[in-house]
Length: 244
Image (cartoon, rainbow, N blue to C red; front, side):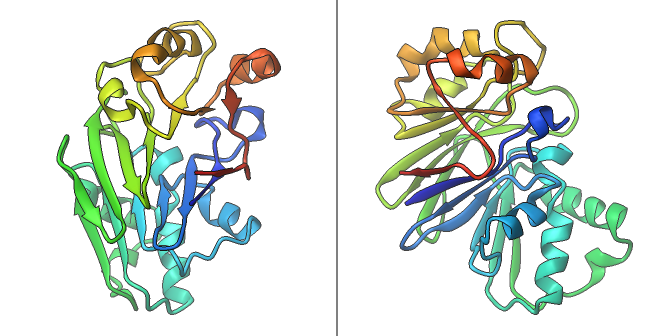
């Protein structure tokens, strides 16, 4: 399988980076993790087929992780997509998606898609399988609005991929990412404590108990980006491809 960072920036485009969206593809799996506002042009930039996607997993309802869905869905509609698509995320995703569609494109939520679209609410700690992909959500801590908030442990084609989502440190990250083949983790700040976000130094103190085979940093703010050359971990960049 292959992991591609379609976008790996924070909400404010630090370093000129695009909003969060990761593409995972293999022999039987083809899905996105998060769909930030810049996702559609980024997918087109990197030549990733939107029509081949089977699943989009959403970690929470902030615009840099969720705001690209109306553009992606309308693009699919205008292209007369026929392949079924599942969008899955925290409880309330159906209502949130309808409100978002209406906020950006009035009456768009009432248009019947040309394809079978399922919007599925996931429950914390309950694994759910979508074709070749099994995902287990873990609750994380990222504020009072835009949630519920999830980290994900994803199993597909014999590999385990974990993603922290946006969060301050919480012990559920150990369960989500323990022994994962790849752990994609937010490192919003270098060592400064910011409520609802994870610093690199805090993350490093917990790496022995998480024990991922590979760690990739994402959602980095300016202070981390400026130190990235001296950081002993892989940092994501827009367009980066990683073999799983």
